[in-house]
Length: 610
Image (cartoon, rainbow, N blue to C red; front, side, top):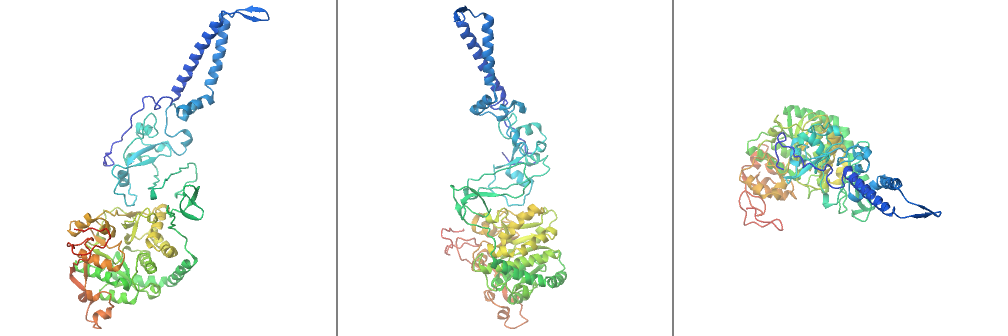
């Protein structure tokens, strides 16, 4: 079906079933025909048989008697009555129904309509009709906030009506929704389909790992807004085992046997409790000092960042590239995790807020890879800085330091015509089950300060033991986003990974055509986030290939005093920032501003980008 505007998309009713029930032996009418035909045949046969024997004489106690016409009629009627009782007994009708696959309602004529319905009466306490709608139509009519699957053309969704009162106003459409005289489910637009729905419970589903997945819908129970998951597996864990009975399982239990959602161990909880103790002891003083800094900034919206010395080159590049493009950074507030980064940030002219006690546990070195111990500890700083600014009532944009601006993203989020959500996230791009259903990237997101988001980020701060157990800030945040969306009605919006507004590493490594548009200046992106990249060294190289590296080599990996040489009159901006970007080739199979055909491949099966 073509995707039309939801106010103009026509309803499509299926062909009406001229027989009412959809085929031979599918209604009570046809069963009655069978019974009548059987009785008539029996009557004729019985009458003929008895009449044929009526001319003979029978010996009864040595007396000869001939059967007259009245006696013949009486005997035939008696036999026919017995046959009718046999054919119309409930057991016989049930046998006919089973033999000819008719609707069960035909077997019980006391239950009303002779029409064939999709949902028989025992299901009507929670199922009274189904309609089909375009998947694209329902997801655009009701913005559920999740990133849509781009391969949805021609795909449809189902709306189940718990009560007959929720069915659409159109009587033909309502009848077709229960196959009441129709041959298949009707198709309509999402607005019409939901016009009488007082509430709409939305279930997003896929087929993870190609499992033979089923759904059990159980009506007449205490309403639940969570899904239980049962899986065929051994008691001691492991992967899918089809010879095992279904067992209650975590939603993070994969078919391969991996458990994505493990409970924190005692030492992981204890480590986080130590950090929380420091935070709770210091938080009132921290808030007082932070409030003073924010008031001096005099901004309604703040760009929040955090950085340790191991990532300081990327921070420098953000500042240098932004200033080279003419952006005002007076609303940027950096939370450095060490003295070295504090000095560099001040030298670059950024507003900073540094609390040594609470940042003492954060390593100074860069993370080796995503999810290692250093990475996990740094994630605590990302949680802390957002929670504090949000708690003080400021709307904020949180950004990792491996980002460059093409346009000021705050202009987008502060546009009054933007649909109002509580939080907006860049799409990470990963579709692992542990990030479902949002796949929200925790390195670029905008938060409106309100009671729901304040509670969300307090909860995230208190859940640091999960961060220690799962090695992923993003995974913990996604779980809470799902729960708060259900529990509090938190409005969450994740921009589709295919969008050119907020692209990241998924696009860089997966979509050459889109990256070519960006390299040619044909895209409308606000930012680029060098996510999905294994380490800092490659991030630097990729930025150089893209023509987005603005830092002098002499400043990379250095401390403030090493750069200025003790001369306080020297600024880092003049010493380290380039007016024009470095464009340098490293790998021919990665996106680049210029052809890099003479460079080696990075990926094993890579192909030249240009």
